[in-house]
Every structure is written in C-alpha cells, then in structure tokens.
Amino acid sequence: MKRVLSGIQPSGTLHLANYFGMMKRMIEYQETSDLFAFIVNYHALTTLHDAKTLKENTTEALIDFVALGLDPDKCTFWVQSDIPEVQELTWILSTITPTGLLERCHGYKDKIAKGISATGGLFTYPVLMAADILIMNSEVIPVGKDQKQHVEVARDIAQKFNNTFGETFILPEPEISETIATLPGLDGQKMSKSHGNTIPIFAEEAEIKKAVMSFVTDSKAIEDPKDKDHPLYTWLQLFASENQFAQNFLDGGVGYGDMKKKLFEVIWEYFKDARSKRDELKNNPDHIQEIRKKGAAKARAVANKIMEEVKKKVGI
Ligand code: TRP
Image 1 (cartoon, rainbow, N blue to C red):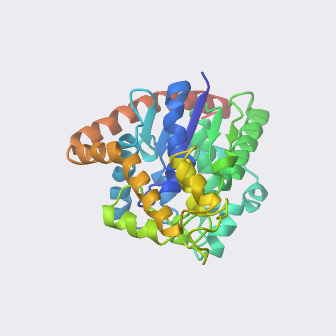
Image 2: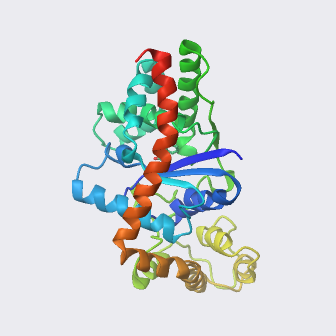
Image 3: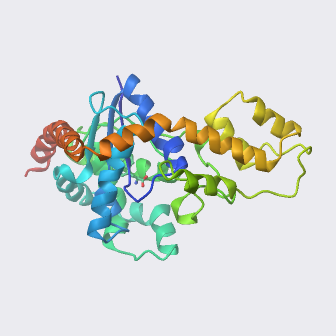
C-alpha cells in the first residue's frame, strides 16, 4: 500500500472547494492506501497571529474532517505541532536547501503581492512542508495545483539530502487532480477564502442558501440553453452527476433561479449526516482530544524512527 500524505491549513471556515479539492480525496484514500492526514497549524502561523483563533480553528478542522468521514482508526491523523521533531528536521533540511530554490517559489511571491508581510517563516514555508512530507516517508502527495511546486521542492530537497548524506528519503510525487484543479466560486473566479467567494460546508441553512443564491448569472431567459462552464452546472455535476435537471439547464427550460434552488437542496442533503456527526463531536470535546492524542502518538512513532536515522547520518 502506498503511503499517501496531505495536510490542510486550519485557516477558518472550510468551504466546498476545500472539500472537493482535498478532503474528499483524502477520505477516499483511507480505504486504499496508508493514509497520513494532518492539520498544519505551524504553517497557518505564517499568516495568522491570534492565539484564540488559531486554537479554535485547529480543533474545528479536526472535528470537520472526522464529521466528513475521516476515520482515525483507518489512517494516521494528527496536528502538525504535536510532532515537534518536524522542526528539528526543518532546520537540518534548511542547511542544504539552496536559497535560489525558495526564491523561485510562486507561493511566497503571491502571498507578498497580497500584502502578507515578508517574514523568514513565509520564505522557508516550503522547507517545513518538505520536513512534513519526508519525516513520514511519504510517497504520494495529493494537493491542489497551487501546492505542486512545493512538493517538487520537497523532492529536490530529499534528493539533495540523499546525495549529501547517503540514501535516506523516499522521493515524493505530487498528485494533482485535473478535474478539480480550479473549482469556481460565487463570482466565477477560483473558489478561495482570499477571494471571498466561498460556500461554507458547515453553516446555518440561511447562510448557505444566501451564498448559493448569489452565484453570478447573466440575462439568459429560462428557455435559453445555458453554458456548460457556468459554475452552477459545474457544482451540480459534482454533487449529483448524471442529473436530468442539470441537463435541462444546458438544453434550456431551467432558469438560473431554479438551478440555484436545486443546487442548495442538493448541498444541504449531501452534508446531512456530516452535520449531525459534527454536532455530536462538538458536544464531546474529550473525544476529539482523545483522537488528537492517539493520532499524535502514531505519527510520532514514525517520525522518531526517521529522525534517528537522519541524526546519525548528519552526525548529531
Ligand atoms: N501548504 C499546504 C497548503 O496550504 C499545506 C501543507 C503543509 C501540506 N504541509 C503539507 C500539504 C505537506 C501536503 C503535504 O495547502
């Protein structure tokens, strides 16, 4: 079984593109691979400097993942900072990482362009990500298109380490799903928290309805055929493929308003079980802490074994 690893930032309310872009894939992988899934709170610290929010978001992300179907007994599921060894490895890797490699990273440049302060942490973000990946001997890394370069950097760093100190790390491969590379938001741009065009997975009914009803539309009449690229069609297909309603939307006969109502109904129904599981988990904070503790112990055992070898190789 392949070891598949990916992490998600606890950056606030998770939205539909987080789910279809990453979480759903991970949850499916627990059946077919040796899955390692984690909440990357150290990475979140590059953009979020508010203790209460970071702490809350981390717990929420744990709860949401489990509510959506991640089974901690079928995979290794932990919080990044619960494995402090990852910081030791980050330092060791940083001593062999050419700065030019980091200077070429789009992620860093994009964030600075958005007004995020240019800190050392933001610059060395890919080294920490490489440590995340390499400390668990991961083989396949399912990520969004925007993170592909970071996985390639992890691969370069692994190779550099192996060349310098001898064969140690597996070279990880990114896995990008083309169909979900860019899922459209309410305004038709990529759905992303920073664009403010998202639909939350878990929110009050009225809030989700309001979001869905605000998808941008043009002036086409009910009977006009609609565009296959329209976000409403893309989303309805994702939730319910082979859908006659969606077909009628394309052929003409279904207007934007009805399509929005339909999409809302489908979304609301789709996450029904997850919502009740989430309510249950929220009422049982001890259970979530137990999941967190057990996951950390499992992940730490793997990390420690690799760190022992790394330290021996480098002479520490
Ligand atoms: N940087 C990733 C993101 O923002 C999250 C991440 C951190 C990650 N470490 C990782 C993803 C290791 C995959 C593997 O989406």
